[in-house]
Image 1: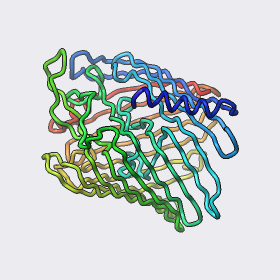
Image 2: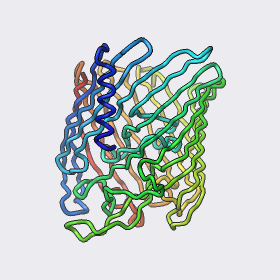
Image 3: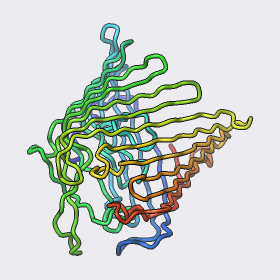
Image 4: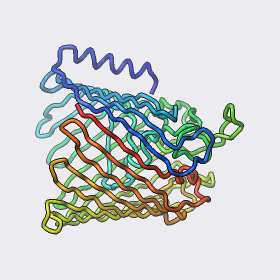
Length: 406
């Protein structure tokens, strides 16, 4: 987002909260990664370190008005593109009663989550992804919006006015987990208004018995770019790819059925206005099916185990521009429910189109009241040279984070 817009939003919120009661919270994290495989490109390192600071300032102006500001800063020792700052949230919140209903209005930058799947959410389209942060968790950039919510016994209706598009971030020349071609920091747009095209979104959600569901619609600039041949990068003569953002229309459905220890999940979309891998415009459908099983008090202990399986399918198959063409994900999550809050997770991702297999392991544990630790390993067991993301998918790594919460 342009600096002027961020400053204006922060100034408005600061003025509104001059006499408000405020609360500050957040966390600072020291992070390191080690990549056992040799780099695929010159300038890449086998180990990297960094610092991440994210804080949230909340203030209550009146009983029906408040503001939230959440800035983030990351420093990375290896990739200059990964060193960056962003305002994840900076919005005014107003709410009240409307007859038997309740309304809520958010103005500013905010993050919105849609979906029920664990690995990838097809329907989640409001925010842009921050791909330099993490290859799996995919944190979101703050999205400028006017977000109106009206709720009642009949369900929840949300309307979004999105006046500005944010470009997706990608690793730089010396960053690990990058594709074989460097992604240009500039972008091209189908709309003549470029990033200032006004997008619209709507979502209705409700709970009926054991079923939770949501229906959504989006019209505007796609958050997922196509890639066009870019200009020659300097000082290297290697070609780059230029992100190109189309005007699309998307209808989405998400549903979760809870029956005892089982959760049945589904996300489905129909998208039009986008081109496929062959450069032809093609309307398409994509779907995620998931099954989750919870096992409480495992073997009579305090530990709880959750087992999850998901299948991701894109109807364009080999013509798909998404990496989620035909993928199977199986994972287990173990919570020991001990005093340090120890949690372990293990997952296998298999691309059934390309010959790709990856193992993801994670351990989280509190070290004290303020400090916590997270160990993570992503091991790429097999990669397919025909995959456009082949070079990045070779970058297995072991990471450790030490986080102080305040």
